[in-house]
Image (cartoon, rainbow, N blue to C red; front, side):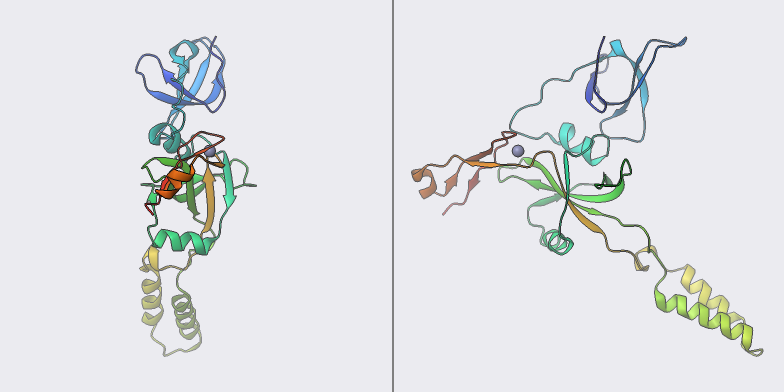
Length: 240
Ligand SMILES: [Zn+2]
């Protein structure tokens, strides 16, 4: 019998598609026991697969993080990031504005903030890359914080003001109130007052860099390096 962890990447034998196990179900009169699984790029849908239909995926390549197999399932919330730590919002925004080597993940991502249990928050991810073009398995996340998202305060005040006048002054045209309400209701989403987002660093591995350079390679500005935990190539060619 197959015995998979939840969540875990598995392969559907028939189609070769990669899936993520979400829930175990027992055999019943309709069929054998199996797992409810999501596609690796969409945690919102699940489908049942019998144990026999699933197998282990090929072993992951050491030393690199694969976009489709490692990054996408975590960004989509189907797998958890191994580490989620708070980051400074000002520095995070400043790096995003500078486009400093971070690649924006296209579309909505999800981050489970520490202390939020299973609740996933809506986020934008900025993926870190190594100098040699690969993903480092780390990213900065800007998490949308709910709560505010109010109409601009000057419009709220204008509506209250018009309402008060309409009630207390007999000759005040009621149209003033209607106009103020209409203006508030037509305020575009992006002009409303919102809460500040929060910033986080999410990672598959908290890298520990092992410098493998030699005296002569350092003279050429070549600093070969790898992470002693996951083996990823973190070499830097400073060309100095
Ligand atoms: Zn590492």
